[in-house]
Length: 249
View 1 (cartoon, rainbow, N blue to C red):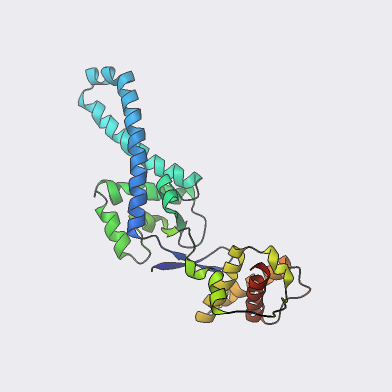
View 2: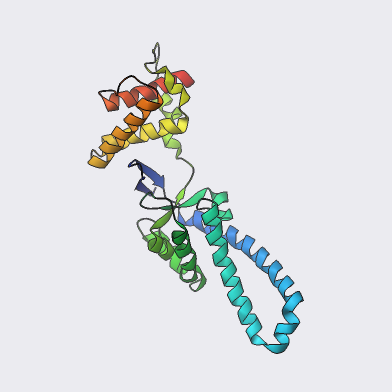
């Protein structure tokens, strides 16, 4: 299972599961179906309104114009859907995948514009072969548009193995007195971040993961309104996880 580790602007390392070729192809064809329905409707309207004028005076240039018009609509569809829908077209939304930057920053308009323009090479001129080969072979599952914009496509759904319920199957806690009852105000997503941060630090003890750990402890100290910062960050975070399980199960 391919993943990408992205350092957010808050210096927190997060693992994203990369969307595979099948998911991206299904999303692509769903978008294509929507696009074809729209372009057919617009073409029919255009031909009925201006068709006689264009065909009578320009001939073949009319159909060339329609071709450029169709390409422009396809590019603009992806551009504006991703810009205004947090990196998701309709197809990506159905497949629960989205575009993210590989450096953790929010994708800008220019990033989405690059991805959309490069679709001419990735999918239109090559019938999708170039995009498929690059997605399968590249480390971050990137087509040319992704490489140019420093983006990739990831799954939005969290992997089941990271659910807190899995901890309950491994560790049974009886007669346990919670140390931090205020942890109930946190969400499962918050605790998932805690668990992932601890796991990453224990597996890869580098400066980036240590910094993420310290920032997380500082933030939780403020959120839980603790009188002082805990001396042992790892033990503190693990205690929060146990408290959360006991108080919410």
